[in-house]
Length: 260
Ligand code: GLP
Image 1 (cartoon, rainbow, N blue to C red):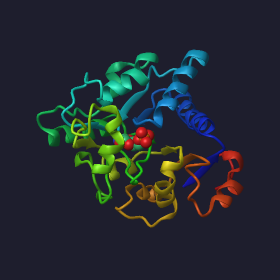
Image 2 (image 1 turned 90 degrees about the horizontal axis):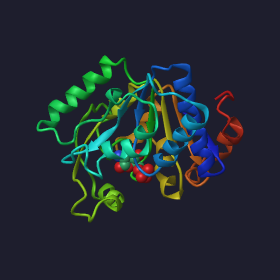
Image 3 (image 1 turned 180 degrees about the vertical axis):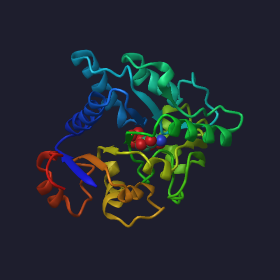
Image 4 (image 1 turned 180 degrees about the horizontal axis):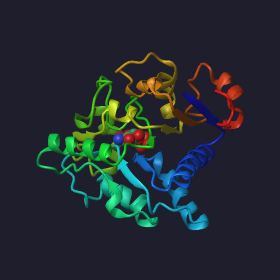
């Protein structure tokens, strides 16, 4: 794992954005795995800005989002479909036919999960998977004790996760109980992963992910088994790391080009 620690959240976001831009510039038909959540919003703002200012193009890019709530139609204002439209897709030159999210309103979520997996494979697999992390160590909606061999499937959300996401809904009761999410093994099949975490609320989860044992209790720790993972953090999210000084030494100011 490459652990890049930047001074501020804004710097961490800019650094993470740079990875996405480099990917689409080097491979104009790249397949991007996308994430949602508050952490990603400034990153999508930066991508929009770089599209506008520098003409960074997404015309040939395909995208697959990690997850979607069960029971919400794509036009529901709290769906991840809607989030992606508003945060990114409406503002860049991406072909809507090449943007994919699981359908949370499918009558048969198991069949939908299989369809999604097959579509990822048929598109050639994910070149760069963007990830956030939940305070409980989830990636996508792979809650603690998710199988590290899991594939895209229906998952029951923990109360903690529902409470964390309640802010987007009218009430806790309105917050969905289930989601369709790529599995941990699906994520690990991506050719590269980029995890962005900012703020002190993520410090414990980040420490467990990077320095804890590989264990289903912290699904993000499975990323230790992947050969090409970059973790971009601000100082606050990095605060729980025991080897902080080493990561600063290896990648001064978050310089990813240094030898790992
Ligand atoms: C959500 C999403 C995850 C996201 C995480 C953190 O529940 N399913 O993909 O990484 O929680 O969200 P935030 O960035 O808002 O803290």
